[in-house]
Image (tube, helix red, strand yellow):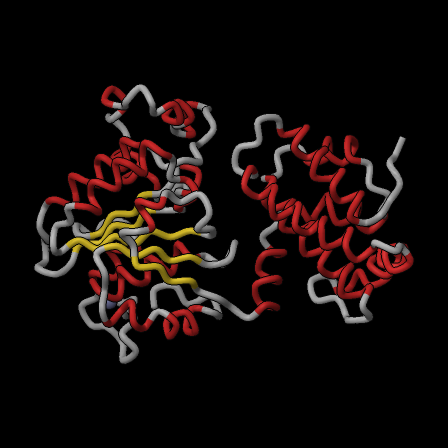
Length: 339
Ligand SMILES: [Zn+2]
């Protein structure tokens, strides 16, 4: 494997065995947040393009082809992702590919205005732009340089908006026989049904403790939110101001894990995500246990957080969005409104 630092990759490799043995034109691979499903998608392509695969079918990581895939230089490999997901030093080839399409962008492609390289001082785009998809369709119509399959990674699917999804659909509907599309992402919710219906879907899972540790390790929200949660007494508007530029999904993930641990403690079970916060969790579980509708409140709160995830990528008003989230948290914990 090219990427060996993730302990769950070998397990995923097994989980995806049918996918590797009978590859589909289009595959959609989903995995929990922060588990690097994008790297796994790259492994699928690298393994097929590898000149001397290992016994388990994975890429050797040593041959010229593996090197080209890793450097995004392989003639039969493309990786389409939002500019925000491109590493600073490796964005050149992909950025060049997505540039130059601006003039051809449709009127409905409003998100294109979000794009722009870091050099211009603009924020890197978090969406897959329609010009990127169009350039991929050009790639997908040319036959393979090296006689095998051609691979295109596209993701995360959450970043695929309506116009771009429609453009991609064209490629999926009239595939060149040698093309393999691998779409990847964290959530199926919001992926257009037309795209879903053309993809073979694979959902990868990992052991719960491993997922939690990985999610928490990568969450910047921990730094400011965990001390607040520890102290309790939720103040929606003050907490919302502290959120600053944290991605709302990180906050929702962290709050969800926190409430699940409160729920565990309330039933006398040891916390899983925040074992070092047992005292704070107990303090918050006690009023819930005493409240006649405590368990329902908590369950409703967790459900509401999940519901907010649908809006997490594009809150219309971030401050207000965070205030709503923290208001729901306050209610879930059965705390009185702050004044
Ligand atoms: Zn190789």
